[in-house]
Image (tube, rainbow over all chains, first blue to last red; front, side):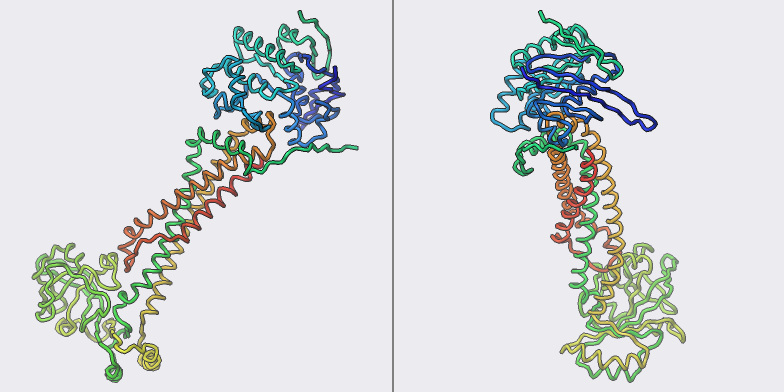
Length: 229
Length: 387
């Protein structure tokens, strides 16, 4: 298996005016294709920042990120967006749906950006797959948290991404809904063979991915693999 | 050494990218109420601009058309404080022209019925003035008795103010006169001037009887000429030395047109300033509403960025929305401006001596559209670039 994501000596420092704040320090790891990885750690340990850097949403202070064999920090912002559209799917804690678009229109966005045929049909199939056939034309404000996250999952998978970044996907959901959403996410991920990078506080959920990276104070303190039953 | 990798990707023009236009529409349909402030700012600013500009154009056109009626004659010669010299009059008599004359001065009038008094302007007339246009009289006015009996006509506003009726008596100086009619319109006079200094009209031959003209009286004498064979330029040339010699002045239709034009130019400048202020306020409205709108859209822009949209694609999505609303606001502004065309003449009719015909000025409309587009583009680009 080849590596889809390679992080080398990655550091991120924020200048707060008076002093520099090191959020990530010398992080290195690799993720193989079609595998899973969870990033865990206490609040403020740099999990979300690391995820953002891996997806090319932000630029590191030093080190490099290779995503699908492309060094992200050597690309312009628009080129990084292009790479994301071709290779990456996102699921966020706050769902991040566009409030002015219906569920169907939200799901269609990534594929519309890429361009292609039968976008609407593909989006409808995915919404059907996540159990929202009757809610396609509803706006996010008309959907529950669980339903919104299911729309976000459908949106993340519409481009058949090589890698999926999920940032606390169940963080805003109750236990029961969180379980349903997690099951759905892992199911579709398995079906499509997507590499999964998950940021979570939930150790049980993290164990589902088969590998856990533990961060503390911006440093990688543990990288362990777990056998999935 | 650091180097930048360029990804080869297909560049799609904004006009060919259906996604940009579709998203611009989809996103805007839920935001129209929020963007109402943006539209209303443009509507008010452009409306004022178009209305004032069109009004000015219509005013200038009507001044050109109605200057003859405003002056009432081809040539008016004026003497202040003294009667025309006999030599001068005999010189004029040799011209092939129709003549009329009047004497104008301020005096007091006494209403015998009510005992009221009022400062008025006296116009003592002789001849068929006005040669162009007409004096408007109330229906029950008796022009025959004005010419034959010892009677006067008064401005209708004066009659209303003092509850005077036809055949009532007024006293001007030493003489008493019957009222034979009411004047509702006189060339060159406005309703507002009639309210401040209402006019009592009497035949010039009766002026002596009032005993009001004495040595030092501030009387303005006017001689009106209607040229039968034309030749105004030659007459002006011949008149110039005479006028200079006796200290008279004269006015032609052309000079009245110019004077009025200059006078209204000041009015136009004032109105233009008002419309400019409205436009500035509109600009501030546009800038602040676009700023707020763009601020709200930062979240959507970030999500689109995650999904893979380029900076320009996001810029165009919101720019198209704002530009479309700018066009819509400008069109509505132009329509408002045109509608105001029909209201403005009614508002100012009491203040100006001409009848303004409301006509659509396409130049002003086009200018308004252009200004609206420029404003909405200029004031939206800066906040959008920062998105």
